[in-house]
Every structure is written in structure tokens, then in C-alpha cells.
Amino acid sequence: MTPVIAVVPGSHEGRAALDEIGGLLASLADVVELRTVELGVETYRRTGQALPAEALEALRSSDAIVIAAPPGPGPADGDIAPGVLEHGIVFALRRALGLSVNLRTFTGVGEEAGIDIAVVRENSEGAYFSPGDLVHDGTADEIAVQAVVTSASAVERCLRYGFEQARLRGQSLVVAHKVRVLTVSGGIWIRTAERVARDFPDVAWRVESIDTCCGRIVSDPRSYGVIATDNVFGDILADVVSARARAGDYAVSVERPLGRSGPSLFEPMHDTHSSAAEHLARRHLGLIGAFGAALVDLGLVERGTELHTASIPSTAGSGAGA
Image (cartoon, rainbow, N blue to C red; front, side, top):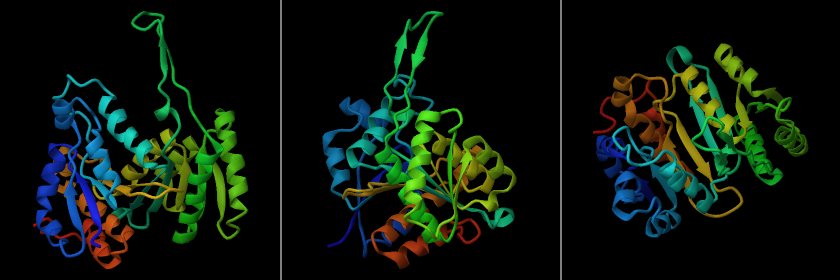
């Protein structure tokens, strides 16, 4: 049976990027079926729902998911409150599909050659998944409370995947946290790492403070291989690595449902360091890489590797999207 990749344009920019590589996607018709699933501002305005049931079912029944661009509101969508689509689509998908671990890989090219870092991020807990609360909101005495949720089971899934990636890539693992300050949640990370490490005696690993890790990535990025950390720290750390490796235009983010069946989700990294003009000129590269990673995940290694090669700036031709 032909595998199905559900394709979510996400925004006008996502549609434009998909159009740019339309010829390349058409050439995949002999190995995969691409099915468009609409999510984002237009769907929300039309249905009043961030994640309609039929869209969720279409995603759940696919073999892989590619999101072309974040399905959140843009600068012109001020009528949609912050967080409505982020929580209603992105976080809701993570819960519904069990996307518990996020992997972001960064390979430097040109002057940054030799940088090869993978960030493994716990994807289902932390401050992002705490609803939070306000007291005395709207006054000068306003107080916000946003808890950090950490469970040993979720941390173990993340760390075990991190150790597996380090073994697969032939690299060491850094467990990054702020355990001297966040002693309760950080303690779970360190104790779990010590326990999981016994199953990987061939993998060198160490603990680093998250701020030390960020600083050393800037000054000595080639000394890092795989880094495992929590949800918020991983989100920030990935942007630091992306900027240092200058890989934001072509790096790929993968969210995986560890411990359960279902599709993985692939998307281009959100570029944080290029100018708007540079990003528009190269936005198709990360999308090509996302499709390449999805094909490899589906067992179509040769075709997926071809796309991955085409997504790296030093090897990508100007006609990649023709």
C-alpha cells in the first residue's frame, strides 16, 4: 500500500513554499500519496475550531505529517488572541498524537562546517503545558503562576531517545538543565539520566547547566553532539544552535510518538537569524528537508536522502523547486 503523507500548508507562506517545490513533490507520486489537510487562521475563522475533528482524523490516519509553516496567526490577524492557535493546534496535536519527543538536527556548512548537533527535547510537559493562573489580573498587583510539570516517565522517554541518538551518531550526550536552581524538576532529570545511562555504557555523557551549554555552543559548537533537555530549554537552545550553525533555513524538526503507534510530524525549523529577504529566498530548503526526512522515516531511504542533499545550501541547486 502506498504510504500517505498529510501536508498542512499552515499559512500563506507555507502555501507559497509548497508551490515553489511543486515540481519536486509531483515527482514523488510514484512512491507516496500527498493529502492536503487545512489548519490555521482560515480554518479557524471558517469553523470556529482550531483543530476540527475531521482534520485530526486525517492526520492521525496518515503515515507521516509535514507542516509547511506554523499555522499560527500573522501580524494582520490581531483579532485572534495570542495562544489560541498555538495551544489549539500545535499543543493539541502533540497531546492527541502522543508526540512526546522533538528532534532538531543542525549541520553547519561553509564557514560553519564541522558543526553537527542534535537537540532532543521533551515535548509533552514543562511550562508550555501548564494552563497557568492569574490573580488580581488587570491591576498593579497582578500575579501570574505558571507551573513546570515534570514526570519521570516523560523524562525517561526523552533521555532514552537521546542516548539512542548519541549511539547512532557516534557522539556524546549532554543533559542540559538548571538543576542547581530548579532542584525539584532538575533532580528528576539527573536521577533518570544516571539510571538510563546504565543501559548505554558505550555512550559518554555529562550534565551541563543550560546557560553554560548555550554559552559554549556559541564559543565552541564543534565540541557538542547530542543535547537532551526539557521543553522550554530545548526550544530556546535549538534557536541558539540554529543561529550559531547558520542552519535555520534548512534544519528540520521531527516530533515522534515514542511508545505508541502513529505518524511522526516533520516541519522546517522556524528561521530566527536570517533577514526577511534571505528567508524568503531560501524558505523552500527546509521544506524539502522535511519531506526528505519523512521519506526516510517511511523506509524510502534513497529518495529521502536525495531530498535531504538537495536541501543543504552547499549542494542545493537553484532549480530544486522547479
